[in-house]
Length: 330
Image (tube, rainbow, N blue to C red):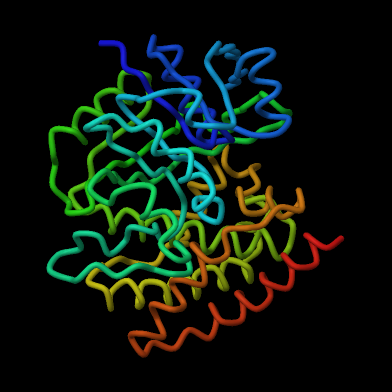
């Protein structure tokens, strides 16, 4: 059945989702801005994946109010942009519209329905409760992204990993609800992998281990993932970050093993992602703000609250913060 779906933040990941959903026959609209929005309005959203090239004709606006109520809303912006993007969500909501947050790092809703723990807003991710004021927590569905994409030109989204696009979904209370199962089936029909996670926060941390190691090494050196993984000393640093992150996650009841084993490194070097620059490095090179808080600083704050020492993470954050300041000021 055709669904009305709005993607708020139609950049690399959001544009990929919008193009696939539109091609599957759904009534898709996007919230975008600047030259990207103008190109989509003029020419449609161009999606490239390997030899495939598809142009999705869809409604596009800078304002959610122009698009009307939807059956599903997907927010796919960077964590630092969410307070601004959230203001476009209320006009898109019908009586039961769920809102999927497909973002990297610790999500703003992390403590919503987390076992018996009380709701605690993470101010660094949702300053003053701006997101919560626009998007009721009961609407939220989490999503963890395994999909490498770029925006090589306004109005164009390119999939770097055409055969590896996985969006892991989950309710904040880890219930396999009918609504999350319905969304998973909808995404799977477009050719995406869309499993429903029994523990969505475990998936958040599993991806965070990858992002923290790769983003740190690549942003501080300018290397692609493959170039970083071929340097044994850089891999050691990434693994130390992982080891500290594993301790932090365990303090919050999430038990994982650090990545960057020889087998994992070799698998990554043999995949298309090897020649890819992480999204944080793409933003850095474009002079844009980076996801430092969601991917690094909030885990550091979790560590402080649990009394866990994180010397490697502390060093990396200091260097990344300066690197970002220099990039945005030049």
